[in-house]
Image (cartoon, rainbow, N blue to C red; front, side, top):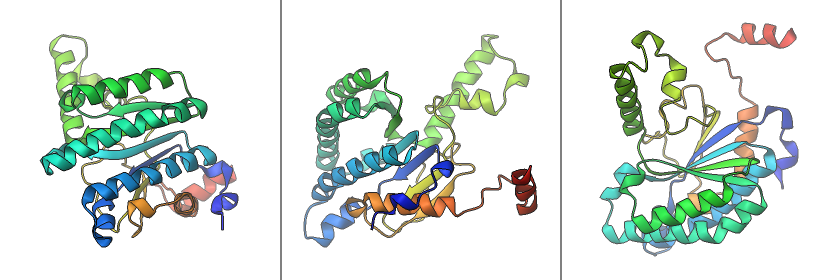
Length: 251
């Protein structure tokens, strides 16, 4: 059954972030190497990009590779980078066709030059698209992001470009990798794990969390729609009481 028809178009999360977990376990269940899981995970990426576009989500951020992932076996890392580059090249035409803008967040200096060159080519091709912003978190760590933000803010204070008293949430937001994106409304994690894994720690302050036991290669459009439906059934209070929310909705 297609769950899309049940979704309320007036309560769509603006920004959905996804921790795509379970490729390795999916492959292991089939007696295959971890790389087999990563390759099959690409299909789920396509499905979720389509699903996000179909529902009117404006920003989709996918956690593809963390700063900690560099510690994985070199062969796996090399394959992951090659797979990422090949996949984005293959999907470039579809991104343009569907008016999807691609951007990358993370420590780009640590990426292989060939990968960065290929990524930048697709980013340039899609820079004027505006239906959906697809952000790939690559060589990304939220703590590193926050540290870098404060370093840059400190430099501005030293150079008399900014006063300490002027620092507020907006100033910090504007120095994060995600400064062009709204805060995360819905965070999805597959594979049954229930942790954040150093992902968008600042941006998920008021996000709703959706955890599922489904391994990433098996995650479908309907699974994404189900996450949206659960999000729509939750009461987002942002620190207020239910009575305050009800009163505000009556006005």
